[in-house]
Image (tube, rainbow over all chains, first blue to last red; front, top):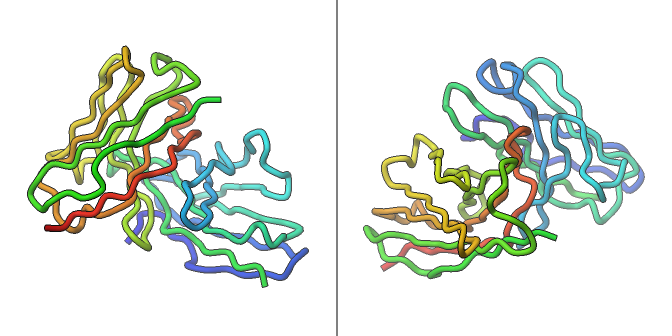
Length: 111
Length: 120
């Protein structure tokens, strides 16, 4: 069981907006540690999608956005496209476990 | 553009030591801004941080694996390595080497990953 909790799956039609939640606790997200998001296509390595809660690396479309509040964070994808179909993982740091922690991942299906 | 490439055996016997190397190309391994680490992903499961190393040699290991893990760095070869001892089937996974942006605590560059299966 992952330290950060994500829904196993979400889905949406092309053009729609979807959000993926990432719920932590007082020892990670709630302790003020930033949340980062990664996108992973089948058979490939994860790639950094969002860092520092809401910052996009160069090359990431502005359809992707992140936010954080309290012990949770969210990834929003607007104008959903078929190419967005992938697994998405959140990541933070946990000062109780003294390690970087990940969510279990959310599979996004574009209907 | 910096690239990471994992190498090592794809099959390891139970109780033996898993050894992987990551070669860094297109950039410096001797940076004060970054650490270098290993992440693994068991089949169909999520991601787990194994540990990291700074170019000067200081290490961090996930407490759940600490007793079995050693990470080392060879700056002359721009490589860093992972040794995981006493492996079991639970250590079967895709192993990724990563670059960790230290101020932000996130992994900004990933290798393509290498599959390691523990089986007799």
